[in-house]
Image 1 (cartoon, each protein chain N blue to C red):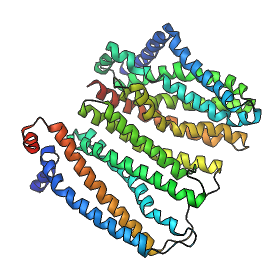
Image 2 (image 1 turned 90 degrees about the vertical axis):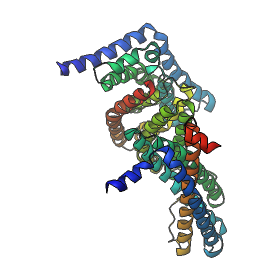
Image 3 (image 1 turned 60 degrees about the vertical axis):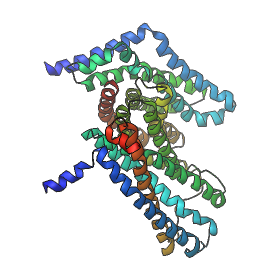
Image 4 (image 1 turned 180 degrees about the horizontal axis):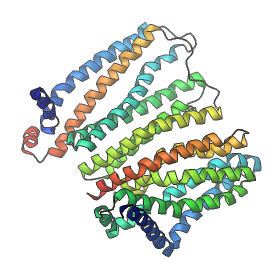
Length: 246
Length: 227
């Protein structure tokens, strides 16, 4: 028992985690590519044409998984940040900073594909709907996190300051979501409803799930690859890291 | 002894910050005039149509108050950080949370309360009636302390950081959105013939939540900044 626990803590050290991440990330990348191929194949060729929306709806296979991941990654990032703050582990902060750009990317993709989808379906690039608005605010939160970390030179301080911000953000995300939702129902401005009434075909659901898995694997792979770069940047003065760079 | 100590320390911090600020009145007045000028710019940009102005007044006044309060946030800890007294506060035997709460309270008295007091006057420029003005003041009275509390976290995080001012706005403005929605929403709901009490209750809930968590998070952020 004691032994198995020791094994896990071993990887909290950047020096031990670096080779592990190096071994793992190609597998996740390969899995991501396989899932993406399967998901895109279902999305483009198997899933039926939508009765109301025609072929245009197929962007859903990118849009919905991207917005799922954008929210999920923020929570994971806050988890690592909180862990780093509580236990003062260096690797946790590095993981949080490695995840942030991927999360911001998915938020941006979700907004971008949403605009591309919205134009033919509702005739507008942007609607002040509750979900769109809170996704936009999520992008602001990611950008704030990235900007704060970029502005602080000392990496340890940047990690900890970013951790406080991520935790404050994660407490605020539900508050923001519900306030935007109530704001939207009060105004009733946009006459477009985003809630999709018709039940989704099974193949469509499978396509979306496969694409979500693909994005998930991609996120893990990029986070691991990025955390390797961060480890090398910060530990560059150590013997093992110098040896690694040769 | 300890119990009395904490309250008197809180009072001393507030008194100290107020004294410093009142000796340099320009800082307090700058925030206030910023609010007045921003609110006066909107009719110039949109046009003097009374019906339209009355409709957008709550939003404009709330956004103006938000920006004005944010403008003064950076000063909350900056001077103390530069002359080293912030370090002494961190080292003092009094819990840092108490000192931070005192500083937040002082910031609200200097930057929040004047905005609340001048808002009805600006509301008159937008042709709001007496009832809407009263709700505007009530919503600002509940909302501006939340801005000081949440803003303190950002001010502490960006202490001594490159480009702190712009960064602070990037960090804090998204977090102000719920306050803005419920604050401006209270006035709009009343104008639309609905009760404003729901919005005001939610603002009060946000205030108690922020009053509980923000000093704690600010303390953590200050300790990180001063390491």
